[in-house]
Image (cartoon, rainbow, N blue to C red; front, side, top):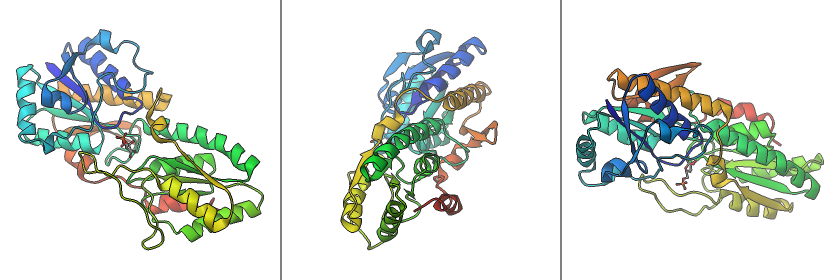
Length: 341
Ligand code: F6P
């Protein structure tokens, strides 16, 4: 078989580990050939490829990013995009495609599979918000990076008697904020799933200073104030219709300082959370996903995503995986609230 591989959406630690596992098992165990499609869906849409074999995947296990490149190109927004992909795959003799990505990339994979192409998905996102899998690779690394930052910020918060706000990624789901806030001993965690009351946040900040500690507030970029309590600016939209976020940390910095009188400073972790070498957990999860994805393709299966359920890797219908996002249940948030203030 000749199999195409692509990585789409935001880069994520562990992408290269998936590619390596797919290629190593595909070539060495099954005798398949591979074609690398460049920059997400742009590759199959425009026919941009690269050589992909065992020599290309040598040494990439611990490397961040993706050797294939990535983009947020959405072929569903291009006239005849799905047909063009079908033609480009056929022209290169590609029998099946492994798409490694988050909700957007796998949403396109779902449509391609419905159109009759052989496609297997691998769940990727630092946000951990893909349904049907207990964890996505990249999440553990992002949380560890955020926790390292929070640990360091505690000392400045305490030495300077400042309220420090740490803005982490997560536009619709607060998993990174929740986990890094819990592991880093944050005094308040704000997530998109639970609109916050600024007065309550300020109460927690003041209470913390009264006990002679300095507060750390971890906020997901998509966290929102409760309706009518605070104004936020709207951002631009990307090709998948998502707002470009960032800025909630700055708003909180101003509001907390004005309302409590305590000096407040924000740190935006941004793309640092997606960069660099994956943790051992993410390397192993990504590798196992890759091994199971190539098994599925070898067996001629299509329209499925490999997923972690408990400690097993299973196959779930792509449709189920992309139907809705996995957000933080409010009872999980309630566990963390015990430590607020
Ligand atoms: O989906 C992963 C993610 O890192 C989100 O948490 C974040 O909102 C978004 O990507 C940022 O995307 P970009 O790098 O395209 O600005």
